[in-house]
Length: 76
Image (cartoon, rainbow, N blue to C red; front, top):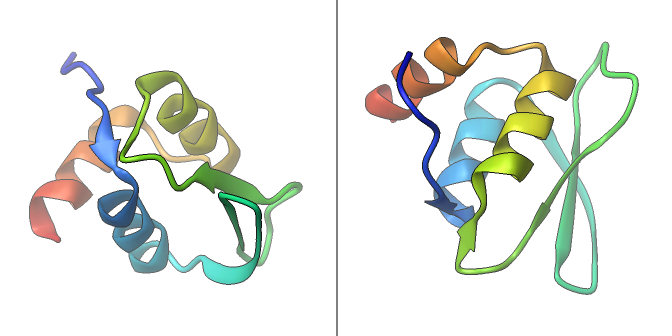
């Protein structure tokens, strides 16, 4: 299985918008996104790169596998 690597927050934001998330608000350096059917919001920091553990936690919240995530990243 391919490994998750850190990505720039803007690239992860493009991924979130691609899968149907909507930007809700910003508090400090954290951006909050939501989507219909999610139990909790997806939160990403505006650091230069998002660590793999934050990506993994957000993928779990979205219900998207690592394989699907990597395939979508290649498309966008």
